[in-house]
Image (cartoon, rainbow, N blue to C red; front, side, top):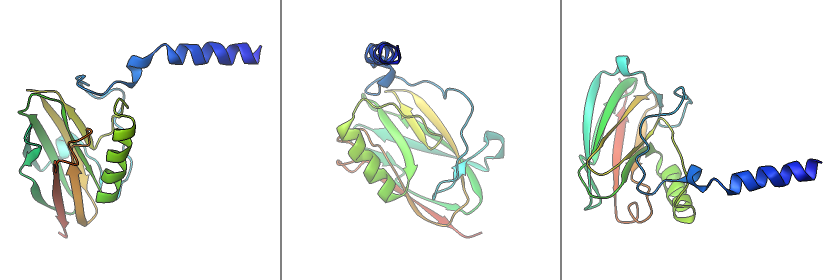
Length: 163
C-alpha cells in the first residue's frame, strides 16, 4: 500500500510542472507571510519602518541604474524596482558568493521557482518592491540571476557603513 501511495504522489508531482515556473511569468505579490530570516547582508524590513526609497531601473542592456549604493547600518530601505526592458528581470540582494552560486543554479534549473524577501522578479514594464534592513556592515551585491543576465554584467554593489 505504501508503494502504491508513493507512485500516486510521484505521479501528481510530475503532472504539475507549472508549479516550477520562472521564465517570463509575472510572479505577482508575495505569497503567504513574510519570512524574516537573518542573512549576512541583513533581514527583511517592515514597509512602515523604511527610512528612504531607492528607485532602481533595470533594462535589456543588462544594467541597473544606479548600480552603486551606500546605506547606513540599521537603515531600512524600500527598493522600487522598475523593469524598463522587454524581458523578465530580477533584483536579488546577497553576498557575491551567494549570488554566484544562485546564478549557477539558475543555469542548471532555469525554471526553478523562488520567492524570498530579498528578491523581486519583475515582468517587462512592471514594478517590484523589496523592503530590506541592512543590519550588518560590509560590501554586498545585487544582481539579476536569470540565465545569461548575471554573466552579461547585470550586477551592482551596496556598501553598508557604520552609523
